Length: 259
Image (cartoon, rainbow, N blue to C red; front, top):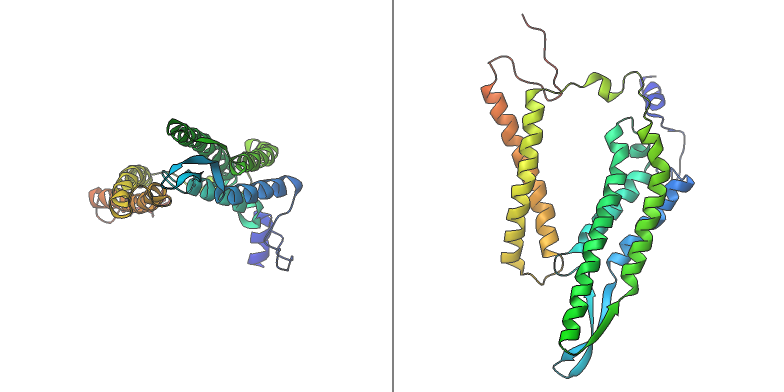
């Protein structure tokens, strides 16, 4: 009985069964999913192709988003996240507004990453031309742009539902309060992301070198994740130590009754 009430509150349809029961296949969400798949495939393709001088004369060369700064890795992760959060039934029907807004943020990050990848591809083509070679933008980069455009179109259709959010009784925002411990935890996490990302880039370049596939991106991702966890732990621990004994700040901002 309790599970049924929970399903009704979350707008879940638990009676569905089958291999694709985890999906919420509306036209707008399928558009985002198709765009996400296109962008993921394009992330593994060359973004620029040409010919440049080599040891045995002019040879074919290409530029991939998976090399150098690793824009392709970031594009893969953001596109995968946007597609899953949009198509998967659980986040798509969540009553947490931030979860419903995350796909739009990821699509915006994917668009910014594509712009940076386009710039990197042009710089690589210019380097080939300075050596006497030739080059141009490869289809992979345009396929990625088309995928991002599809994701953006589907997300724009779904966005008004998040903007015109209707609160319901028992929503998480109705029962959560923000305390000093929460602020310290979030602040420590943000600082940890910055420090961890910087340390991850330095460590990845030192261990793997700048030419390995996505070394900078991998360093940012894993360093940022570890830094976020460590920073949040430090912020939480500092507040707990400074709090009066017997009055620990709860992670949800709720406190027990005072004697």
